Image 1 (spheres, rainbow, N blue to C red):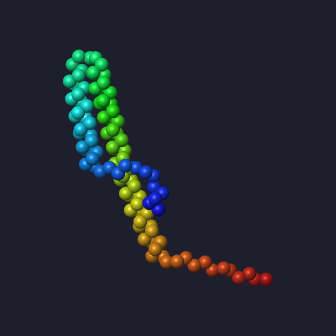
Image 2: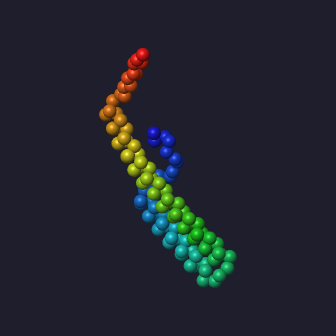
Image 3: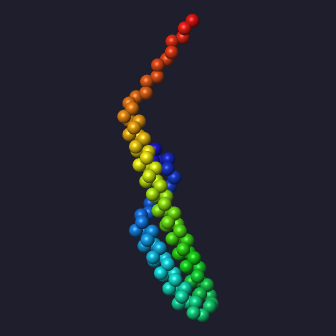
Length: 98
């Protein structure tokens, strides 16, 4: 029953790596440029850097969920295949004696 699985964002390793690289490099460069003199812009860039780190954490979590969902689907398919091989289940009613 793949429809019963919770919703998640499918993410591959390449997307996680790219997001990590862009987030870390971009936010760090912006913060470094603005924080030569501490002020509002510096604090804004620090907030941007934190937001980038949060996006990286989400991408990493999404990747882990994608991997887990793929494994669960593979396992479920194996079980569905085994059930199909068993064929129909027959139930015999026991005759009442007496």
